[in-house]
Amino acid sequence: MNDLAFVDDLMPDPWPGENDAPPRHVSDDWFEAIGSAPPNPASAAVVTMLDARRMNGHDQLRLLKAQQELVSYATAQLYRSMVELVATIASEDELDANAPEEAAAAEIGAALHLTRRTAEYELSTALDLHRRLPSVLDALMEGRIDLRRARTLLRGTEHLSIAGARSVVDTVLPHASSLTSAQLATELRLRCVEDDPEDAQRRYDNAVGDRRVVAEPSVHGTANAYALDMPPHRLESGMRYINRIARGLRGPNEARTMDQLRADVFLDLINGDDPTEGTGDRAVVDLHVGLTTLAGLDDRPGHLAGFGPVGADIARQTVASQPDAEWRFTVTDPVTGDVVHTGVTRYRPTAAEQRKVHARYRTCVHPGCRMPATQSDLDHITPRLDNGPTDVDNLAPLCRHHHRIRHDYGWRYRRLDTGEHEWVSPLGHRYTVAPRGP
Image 1 (cartoon, rainbow, N blue to C red):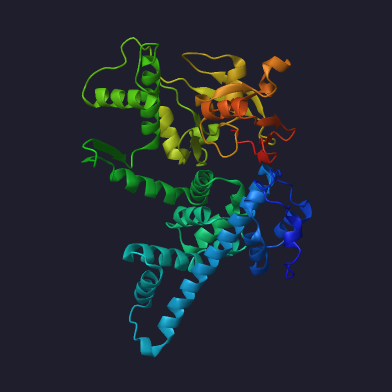
Image 2: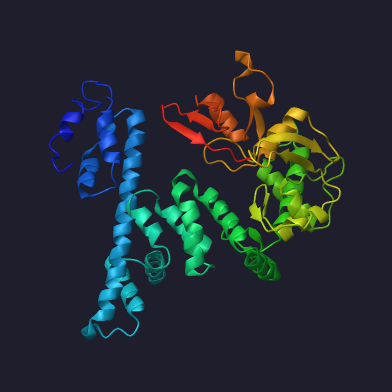
Protein backbone atom coordinates (compact mmCIF):
# COMPACT_ATOMS: atom_id res chain seq x y z
CA MET A 1 0.00 0.00 0.00
CA ASN A 2 2.99 2.31 0.25
CA ASP A 3 3.57 2.32 -3.51
CA LEU A 4 0.75 4.40 -4.95
CA ALA A 5 1.91 4.32 -8.55
CA PHE A 6 -0.46 1.44 -9.35
CA VAL A 7 -3.58 3.45 -8.55
CA ASP A 8 -3.75 5.29 -11.85
CA ASP A 9 -3.53 2.00 -13.70
CA LEU A 10 -6.75 0.87 -12.04
CA MET A 11 -8.76 3.77 -13.38
CA PRO A 12 -10.11 3.76 -16.94
CA ASP A 13 -9.17 6.36 -19.54
CA PRO A 14 -10.74 8.48 -20.77
CA TRP A 15 -12.99 9.72 -17.95
CA PRO A 16 -16.76 9.36 -18.33
CA GLY A 17 -17.98 12.28 -20.35
CA GLU A 18 -14.86 12.28 -22.48
CA ASN A 19 -15.53 10.58 -25.79
CA ASP A 20 -18.70 9.13 -24.15
CA ALA A 21 -16.69 6.37 -22.49
CA PRO A 22 -18.83 4.43 -19.96
CA PRO A 23 -17.76 3.96 -16.32
CA ARG A 24 -15.71 0.85 -15.63
CA HIS A 25 -15.44 -1.65 -12.83
CA VAL A 26 -12.50 -1.25 -10.42
CA SER A 27 -10.55 -4.38 -9.57
CA ASP A 28 -12.04 -6.46 -6.76
CA ASP A 29 -8.49 -7.08 -5.57
CA TRP A 30 -8.08 -3.38 -4.92
CA PHE A 31 -11.17 -3.12 -2.72
CA GLU A 32 -10.16 -6.29 -0.89
CA ALA A 33 -6.72 -4.81 -0.25
CA ILE A 34 -8.24 -1.62 1.12
CA GLY A 35 -10.69 -3.51 3.33
CA SER A 36 -8.23 -6.09 4.64
CA ALA A 37 -6.75 -3.78 7.28
CA PRO A 38 -7.92 -0.83 9.39
CA PRO A 39 -7.63 2.61 7.75
CA ASN A 40 -4.13 4.07 7.77
CA PRO A 41 -2.28 6.94 6.09
CA ALA A 42 -1.36 4.82 3.07
CA SER A 43 -4.91 3.63 2.42
CA ALA A 44 -6.16 7.18 3.01
CA ALA A 45 -3.82 8.44 0.30
CA VAL A 46 -5.09 5.81 -2.12
CA VAL A 47 -8.79 6.36 -1.44
CA THR A 48 -8.54 10.15 -1.76
CA MET A 49 -6.92 9.76 -5.20
CA LEU A 50 -9.91 7.90 -6.61
CA ASP A 51 -12.65 9.71 -8.51
CA ALA A 52 -16.21 8.39 -8.28
CA ARG A 53 -16.93 9.76 -11.76
CA ARG A 54 -14.66 7.07 -13.16
CA MET A 55 -16.56 4.19 -11.54
CA ASN A 56 -19.84 2.39 -12.09
CA GLY A 57 -22.60 2.58 -9.48
CA HIS A 58 -21.65 -0.66 -7.73
CA ASP A 59 -18.09 0.51 -7.14
CA GLN A 60 -19.20 4.01 -6.17
CA LEU A 61 -20.96 2.46 -3.17
CA ARG A 62 -17.86 0.47 -2.29
CA LEU A 63 -15.86 3.69 -2.45
CA LEU A 64 -18.41 5.38 -0.16
CA LYS A 65 -17.84 2.67 2.44
CA ALA A 66 -14.06 3.08 2.22
CA GLN A 67 -14.44 6.86 2.54
CA GLN A 68 -16.71 6.47 5.58
CA GLU A 69 -14.06 4.32 7.26
CA LEU A 70 -11.53 7.07 6.62
CA VAL A 71 -13.86 9.67 8.11
CA SER A 72 -14.14 7.52 11.24
CA TYR A 73 -10.37 7.10 11.34
CA ALA A 74 -9.78 10.83 10.99
CA THR A 75 -12.42 11.63 13.64
CA ALA A 76 -10.76 9.29 16.13
CA GLN A 77 -7.41 10.93 15.40
CA LEU A 78 -8.97 14.35 15.98
CA TYR A 79 -10.44 13.28 19.33
CA ARG A 80 -7.17 11.76 20.46
CA SER A 81 -5.41 15.03 19.63
CA MET A 82 -7.97 16.89 21.76
CA VAL A 83 -7.24 14.54 24.68
CA GLU A 84 -3.51 15.11 24.26
CA LEU A 85 -4.06 18.87 24.24
CA VAL A 86 -5.76 18.67 27.64
CA ALA A 87 -2.85 16.62 28.98
CA THR A 88 -0.32 19.11 27.59
CA ILE A 89 -2.08 22.10 29.12
CA ALA A 90 -2.38 20.32 32.46
CA SER A 91 1.34 19.41 32.52
CA GLU A 92 2.94 22.67 31.46
CA ASP A 93 3.32 25.06 34.39
CA GLU A 94 3.80 28.09 32.18
CA LEU A 95 0.26 27.70 30.86
CA ASP A 96 -1.03 28.21 34.41
CA ALA A 97 -4.29 26.39 33.64
CA ASN A 98 -6.41 25.83 36.74
CA ALA A 99 -9.04 24.16 34.57
CA PRO A 100 -7.19 22.45 31.69
CA GLU A 101 -10.37 21.20 30.02
CA GLU A 102 -11.88 24.68 29.94
CA ALA A 103 -8.60 26.09 28.66
CA ALA A 104 -8.37 23.38 26.00
CA ALA A 105 -11.95 24.04 24.86
CA ALA A 106 -11.10 27.72 24.43
CA GLU A 107 -8.07 26.81 22.32
CA ILE A 108 -10.05 24.33 20.22
CA GLY A 109 -12.89 26.79 19.65
CA ALA A 110 -10.51 29.49 18.46
CA ALA A 111 -8.46 27.16 16.23
CA LEU A 112 -11.45 25.45 14.59
CA HIS A 113 -13.77 28.50 14.58
CA LEU A 114 -16.34 26.83 16.82
CA THR A 115 -18.76 28.35 19.28
CA ARG A 116 -17.94 27.86 22.92
CA ARG A 117 -20.69 25.28 23.39
CA THR A 118 -19.70 23.32 20.29
CA ALA A 119 -16.04 23.25 21.31
CA GLU A 120 -16.98 22.10 24.82
CA TYR A 121 -19.29 19.41 23.41
CA GLU A 122 -16.65 18.04 21.03
CA LEU A 123 -14.00 18.00 23.76
CA SER A 124 -16.42 16.34 26.18
CA THR A 125 -17.10 13.62 23.59
CA ALA A 126 -13.38 13.06 23.10
CA LEU A 127 -12.71 12.82 26.85
CA ASP A 128 -15.69 10.54 27.50
CA LEU A 129 -14.57 8.15 24.79
CA HIS A 130 -11.01 8.19 26.13
CA ARG A 131 -11.91 7.79 29.81
CA ARG A 132 -15.14 5.80 29.83
CA LEU A 133 -15.27 3.81 26.61
CA PRO A 134 -11.80 3.39 25.08
CA SER A 135 -12.97 0.33 23.13
CA VAL A 136 -15.44 2.56 21.29
CA LEU A 137 -12.67 5.01 20.42
CA ASP A 138 -10.58 2.09 19.14
CA ALA A 139 -13.50 0.87 16.99
CA LEU A 140 -13.87 4.39 15.58
CA MET A 141 -10.13 4.47 14.83
CA GLU A 142 -10.37 1.15 13.00
CA GLY A 143 -13.34 2.27 10.92
CA ARG A 144 -15.64 -0.38 12.39
CA ILE A 145 -18.19 2.22 13.52
CA ASP A 146 -18.86 5.84 12.67
CA LEU A 147 -19.29 8.90 14.88
CA ARG A 148 -23.09 8.52 15.00
CA ARG A 149 -22.79 5.07 16.53
CA ALA A 150 -20.00 6.17 18.87
CA ARG A 151 -22.20 8.95 20.24
CA THR A 152 -25.14 6.56 20.53
CA LEU A 153 -22.99 4.25 22.65
CA LEU A 154 -21.93 7.17 24.85
CA ARG A 155 -25.45 8.50 25.36
CA GLY A 156 -26.94 5.07 25.92
CA THR A 157 -24.56 4.27 28.79
CA GLU A 158 -23.96 7.68 30.38
CA HIS A 159 -26.16 6.78 33.37
CA LEU A 160 -24.05 3.71 34.18
CA SER A 161 -20.84 3.38 36.14
CA ILE A 162 -17.67 3.05 34.05
CA ALA A 163 -17.54 -0.68 34.73
CA GLY A 164 -21.23 -1.10 33.91
CA ALA A 165 -20.97 0.98 30.73
CA ARG A 166 -17.99 -1.03 29.50
CA SER A 167 -19.75 -4.30 30.25
CA VAL A 168 -22.85 -3.29 28.27
CA VAL A 169 -20.81 -1.90 25.38
CA ASP A 170 -18.78 -5.11 25.16
CA THR A 171 -22.00 -7.01 24.40
CA VAL A 172 -23.16 -4.77 21.55
CA LEU A 173 -19.97 -3.39 19.99
CA PRO A 174 -19.13 -6.53 17.95
CA HIS A 175 -22.31 -6.14 15.88
CA ALA A 176 -22.83 -2.36 16.18
CA SER A 177 -21.71 -1.79 12.58
CA SER A 178 -24.65 -3.85 11.29
CA LEU A 179 -27.22 -1.76 13.18
CA THR A 180 -28.57 1.69 12.48
CA SER A 181 -28.13 4.26 15.24
CA ALA A 182 -31.78 3.82 16.23
CA GLN A 183 -31.46 0.03 16.37
CA LEU A 184 -28.26 0.37 18.38
CA ALA A 185 -29.98 2.69 20.86
CA THR A 186 -32.78 0.14 21.27
CA GLU A 187 -30.26 -2.65 21.83
CA LEU A 188 -28.48 -0.55 24.47
CA ARG A 189 -31.72 0.12 26.34
CA LEU A 190 -32.47 -3.59 26.37
CA ARG A 191 -29.01 -4.47 27.70
CA CYS A 192 -29.19 -1.79 30.38
CA VAL A 193 -32.56 -3.07 31.60
CA GLU A 194 -31.30 -6.64 31.64
CA ASP A 195 -28.06 -5.67 33.38
CA ASP A 196 -29.74 -3.88 36.31
CA PRO A 197 -33.57 -4.07 36.37
CA GLU A 198 -33.83 -2.24 39.70
CA ASP A 199 -31.77 0.71 38.47
CA ALA A 200 -33.81 0.82 35.26
CA GLN A 201 -37.01 0.95 37.31
CA ARG A 202 -35.64 3.77 39.52
CA ARG A 203 -34.63 5.82 36.49
CA TYR A 204 -38.03 5.26 34.92
CA ASP A 205 -39.87 6.32 38.07
CA ASN A 206 -37.76 9.46 38.41
CA ALA A 207 -38.26 10.43 34.77
CA VAL A 208 -42.02 9.82 34.83
CA GLY A 209 -42.13 11.98 37.95
CA ASP A 210 -40.92 14.85 35.75
CA ARG A 211 -43.53 14.28 33.00
CA ARG A 212 -44.94 17.45 31.52
CA VAL A 213 -46.64 18.95 28.48
CA VAL A 214 -45.15 22.11 27.01
CA ALA A 215 -46.51 24.47 24.38
CA GLU A 216 -44.39 27.15 22.76
CA PRO A 217 -44.66 29.47 19.74
CA SER A 218 -42.66 28.78 16.59
CA VAL A 219 -40.93 31.21 14.25
CA HIS A 220 -43.69 30.62 11.67
CA GLY A 221 -46.45 32.04 13.85
CA THR A 222 -47.69 28.54 14.67
CA ALA A 223 -47.28 26.66 17.96
CA ASN A 224 -45.58 23.41 18.98
CA ALA A 225 -46.65 21.00 21.72
CA TYR A 226 -44.30 18.58 23.46
CA ALA A 227 -45.21 15.71 25.77
CA LEU A 228 -42.05 14.83 27.72
CA ASP A 229 -41.15 11.80 29.86
CA MET A 230 -44.47 10.05 29.32
CA PRO A 231 -45.07 6.39 30.28
CA PRO A 232 -44.28 4.69 26.96
CA HIS A 233 -47.14 2.17 27.08
CA ARG A 234 -49.74 4.90 27.52
CA LEU A 235 -48.19 7.15 24.89
CA GLU A 236 -47.90 4.26 22.43
CA SER A 237 -51.54 3.34 22.98
CA GLY A 238 -52.54 6.98 22.50
CA MET A 239 -50.54 7.36 19.29
CA ARG A 240 -52.06 4.19 17.86
CA TYR A 241 -55.48 5.56 18.76
CA ILE A 242 -54.74 8.82 16.93
CA ASN A 243 -53.36 6.94 13.91
CA ARG A 244 -56.39 4.69 13.64
CA ILE A 245 -58.84 7.58 13.89
CA ALA A 246 -56.86 9.49 11.25
CA ARG A 247 -56.89 6.51 8.89
CA GLY A 248 -60.62 6.16 9.40
CA LEU A 249 -61.11 9.76 8.27
CA ARG A 250 -59.35 9.24 4.97
CA GLY A 251 -61.52 9.04 1.87
CA PRO A 252 -61.81 10.11 -1.76
CA ASN A 253 -62.99 13.59 -0.76
CA GLU A 254 -60.44 14.10 2.03
CA ALA A 255 -57.71 16.59 0.99
CA ARG A 256 -55.71 16.48 4.23
CA THR A 257 -52.51 14.46 4.47
CA MET A 258 -52.05 11.82 7.18
CA ASP A 259 -49.84 14.20 9.17
CA GLN A 260 -52.53 16.87 9.00
CA LEU A 261 -55.22 14.37 9.98
CA ARG A 262 -53.22 13.18 12.98
CA ALA A 263 -52.63 16.77 14.07
CA ASP A 264 -56.33 17.63 13.75
CA VAL A 265 -57.37 14.50 15.69
CA PHE A 266 -54.90 15.47 18.44
CA LEU A 267 -56.36 18.97 18.63
CA ASP A 268 -59.93 17.59 18.72
CA LEU A 269 -59.02 15.33 21.63
CA ILE A 270 -57.32 17.97 23.79
CA ASN A 271 -60.16 20.40 23.12
CA GLY A 272 -62.78 17.92 24.32
CA ASP A 273 -64.22 17.13 20.90
CA ASP A 274 -64.86 13.51 19.89
CA PRO A 275 -63.32 12.60 16.53
CA THR A 276 -64.10 8.88 16.86
CA GLU A 277 -67.79 8.86 15.97
CA GLY A 278 -68.42 6.31 13.27
CA THR A 279 -64.86 5.04 13.11
CA GLY A 280 -65.39 1.88 15.18
CA ASP A 281 -61.87 2.36 16.52
CA ARG A 282 -60.12 0.24 19.12
CA ALA A 283 -56.54 0.26 20.26
CA VAL A 284 -54.14 -2.53 19.36
CA VAL A 285 -51.25 -3.14 21.76
CA ASP A 286 -48.16 -4.83 20.34
CA LEU A 287 -46.13 -5.92 23.36
CA HIS A 288 -43.67 -8.82 23.41
CA VAL A 289 -43.17 -10.11 26.94
CA GLY A 290 -42.57 -13.48 28.56
CA LEU A 291 -45.40 -15.22 30.41
CA THR A 292 -43.09 -15.76 33.39
CA THR A 293 -42.55 -11.99 33.52
CA LEU A 294 -46.29 -11.30 33.48
CA ALA A 295 -46.68 -13.86 36.27
CA GLY A 296 -44.07 -12.02 38.34
CA LEU A 297 -41.65 -14.96 38.29
CA ASP A 298 -38.84 -12.91 36.74
CA ASP A 299 -38.08 -9.33 35.68
CA ARG A 300 -36.97 -9.72 32.09
CA PRO A 301 -37.76 -6.67 29.95
CA GLY A 302 -40.54 -6.61 27.39
CA HIS A 303 -40.55 -5.00 23.95
CA LEU A 304 -43.19 -2.41 23.06
CA ALA A 305 -43.48 -1.99 19.28
CA GLY A 306 -42.48 1.49 18.19
CA PHE A 307 -40.61 2.26 21.44
CA GLY A 308 -38.31 -0.69 22.14
CA PRO A 309 -37.41 -2.29 25.48
CA VAL A 310 -39.51 -1.54 28.56
CA GLY A 311 -38.99 -2.75 32.11
CA ALA A 312 -40.83 -5.76 33.45
CA ASP A 313 -43.04 -3.63 35.70
CA ILE A 314 -44.02 -1.42 32.76
CA ALA A 315 -44.90 -4.52 30.73
CA ARG A 316 -47.15 -5.72 33.55
CA GLN A 317 -48.75 -2.26 33.84
CA THR A 318 -49.37 -2.27 30.08
CA VAL A 319 -51.32 -5.50 30.34
CA ALA A 320 -53.31 -4.30 33.35
CA SER A 321 -54.19 -0.95 31.81
CA GLN A 322 -55.47 -2.20 28.42
CA PRO A 323 -58.41 -4.50 29.20
CA ASP A 324 -60.31 -3.60 26.02
CA ALA A 325 -57.43 -3.83 23.56
CA GLU A 326 -56.73 -6.66 21.15
CA TRP A 327 -54.07 -8.98 22.59
CA ARG A 328 -52.15 -11.41 20.42
CA PHE A 329 -50.18 -14.22 22.02
CA THR A 330 -47.26 -16.19 20.65
CA VAL A 331 -45.89 -19.52 21.87
CA THR A 332 -42.22 -20.09 21.02
CA ASP A 333 -39.87 -23.01 21.41
CA PRO A 334 -37.70 -22.18 24.46
CA VAL A 335 -34.59 -23.62 22.79
CA THR A 336 -34.82 -22.50 19.15
CA GLY A 337 -37.13 -19.50 19.56
CA ASP A 338 -39.29 -20.72 16.64
CA VAL A 339 -42.95 -19.69 16.67
CA VAL A 340 -45.07 -22.80 17.28
CA HIS A 341 -48.50 -21.26 17.94
CA THR A 342 -50.26 -17.89 17.82
CA GLY A 343 -53.67 -16.59 18.74
CA VAL A 344 -55.74 -13.52 19.50
CA THR A 345 -57.66 -12.92 22.69
CA ARG A 346 -60.48 -10.65 21.58
CA TYR A 347 -61.76 -8.13 19.01
CA ARG A 348 -60.97 -7.90 15.32
CA PRO A 349 -59.43 -11.35 14.78
CA THR A 350 -57.14 -11.49 11.77
CA ALA A 351 -56.23 -14.36 9.48
CA ALA A 352 -53.98 -17.00 11.01
CA GLU A 353 -51.29 -16.28 8.42
CA GLN A 354 -51.22 -12.60 9.36
CA ARG A 355 -51.00 -13.36 13.05
CA LYS A 356 -48.11 -15.73 12.59
CA VAL A 357 -46.17 -13.34 10.35
CA HIS A 358 -46.67 -10.53 12.88
CA ALA A 359 -45.54 -12.88 15.63
CA ARG A 360 -42.48 -13.99 13.70
CA TYR A 361 -41.23 -10.48 12.92
CA ARG A 362 -41.26 -7.40 15.11
CA THR A 363 -40.49 -4.94 12.33
CA CYS A 364 -40.32 -4.35 8.60
CA VAL A 365 -37.58 -6.62 7.25
CA HIS A 366 -35.86 -4.01 5.04
CA PRO A 367 -32.31 -3.17 6.23
CA GLY A 368 -32.39 -0.71 9.11
CA CYS A 369 -36.18 -0.23 9.25
CA ARG A 370 -37.90 -0.15 12.66
CA MET A 371 -41.54 0.20 11.59
CA PRO A 372 -43.54 -2.33 13.65
CA ALA A 373 -44.73 -5.34 11.69
CA THR A 374 -48.32 -4.70 12.76
CA GLN A 375 -48.17 -1.32 10.99
CA SER A 376 -46.59 -2.73 7.82
CA ASP A 377 -47.90 -4.39 4.68
CA LEU A 378 -47.58 -8.15 4.27
CA ASP A 379 -45.45 -8.63 1.17
CA HIS A 380 -45.13 -11.78 -0.93
CA ILE A 381 -41.38 -12.57 -1.00
CA THR A 382 -41.94 -14.48 -4.24
CA PRO A 383 -44.53 -12.24 -5.94
CA ARG A 384 -47.96 -13.61 -6.65
CA LEU A 385 -47.40 -12.82 -10.34
CA ASP A 386 -44.56 -15.37 -10.18
CA ASN A 387 -46.89 -17.93 -8.56
CA GLY A 388 -45.66 -17.12 -5.09
CA PRO A 389 -47.88 -18.83 -2.50
CA THR A 390 -49.80 -16.98 0.19
CA ASP A 391 -48.40 -18.69 3.25
CA VAL A 392 -46.36 -17.68 6.28
CA ASP A 393 -43.05 -18.75 4.72
CA ASN A 394 -43.61 -16.51 1.71
CA LEU A 395 -44.90 -13.46 3.62
CA ALA A 396 -42.85 -10.76 5.32
CA PRO A 397 -43.75 -7.33 6.72
CA LEU A 398 -42.63 -4.32 4.69
CA CYS A 399 -43.57 -0.80 5.70
CA ARG A 400 -45.41 1.11 2.99
CA HIS A 401 -42.27 3.03 1.99
CA HIS A 402 -40.04 -0.04 1.62
CA HIS A 403 -42.86 -2.01 0.02
CA ARG A 404 -42.90 0.61 -2.71
CA ILE A 405 -39.07 0.69 -2.86
CA ARG A 406 -39.02 -3.09 -3.37
CA HIS A 407 -41.43 -3.04 -6.30
CA ASP A 408 -40.64 0.33 -7.92
CA TYR A 409 -36.85 0.49 -7.60
CA GLY A 410 -35.73 -3.06 -8.30
CA TRP A 411 -34.71 -4.27 -4.83
CA ARG A 412 -34.85 -8.07 -4.42
CA TYR A 413 -34.84 -10.22 -1.30
CA ARG A 414 -35.27 -13.79 -0.14
CA ARG A 415 -35.68 -15.59 3.16
CA LEU A 416 -32.71 -17.77 4.12
CA ASP A 417 -32.88 -21.07 5.99
CA THR A 418 -31.47 -19.23 9.04
CA GLY A 419 -34.56 -17.00 9.16
CA GLU A 420 -32.54 -14.04 7.89
CA HIS A 421 -33.49 -12.04 4.83
CA GLU A 422 -30.92 -11.34 2.14
CA TRP A 423 -31.52 -8.17 0.13
CA VAL A 424 -29.87 -7.27 -3.17
CA SER A 425 -29.88 -3.61 -4.18
CA PRO A 426 -30.24 -2.45 -7.80
CA LEU A 427 -26.49 -1.73 -7.77
CA GLY A 428 -25.71 -5.31 -6.77
CA HIS A 429 -24.87 -4.89 -3.08
CA ARG A 430 -26.08 -7.53 -0.65
CA TYR A 431 -27.44 -6.89 2.85
CA THR A 432 -28.43 -9.53 5.38
CA VAL A 433 -31.12 -8.64 7.91
CA ALA A 434 -31.13 -10.75 11.06
CA PRO A 435 -34.55 -11.86 12.28
CA ARG A 436 -36.07 -9.54 14.86
CA GLY A 437 -38.74 -11.89 16.13
CA PRO A 438 -40.34 -12.49 19.52
